[in-house]
Image (cartoon, rainbow, N blue to C red; front, side, top):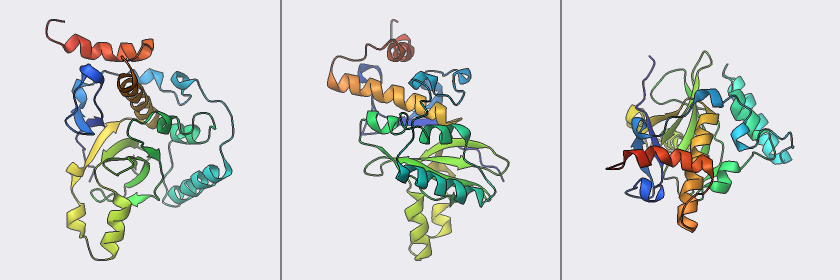
Length: 224
């Protein structure tokens, strides 16, 4: 059984261009600026490209352990995810721009509670776990990014302790599709976070890339 997840994006307000009712809000995908998939080749050129700089030993060991655990299930981490987390200049680029203090944090591969054979790997989380982002790995090599309000690593611990049931966990509405690849997720997250910070700290962005993204919202304004 292949589950089709609802698609939306979870992030913050973008100054006067997009409101947010709370710290985070889910935005329907058809309201977002479109991204060109051809720009996501696994080299992260939009972020300055791969540098070849090594990552700290502890980070390398953690990634290697995760890669082995995923391989033991007959699955594989996507190449763009590995390239980003193996590059000492790119690593933590998302952490550095996170407006709410989000941070890179891996979980072991966790069985999808709604789709047999699929697994979730948490890679990024809000500091208060308001929202968490996961790779969603399917047999056959399909991989995309989802987000959820649920911290599934803790949920599985509660399940083992008898404090949560499989039925309570098996809610497909709790998992939302948000990007076709890790690099696509990283790009939109980085752009929106930069915009959010520029409005928080000043009058807004001046970077042409960020202004081009906001132009989509400017065109939606009444009278535009």
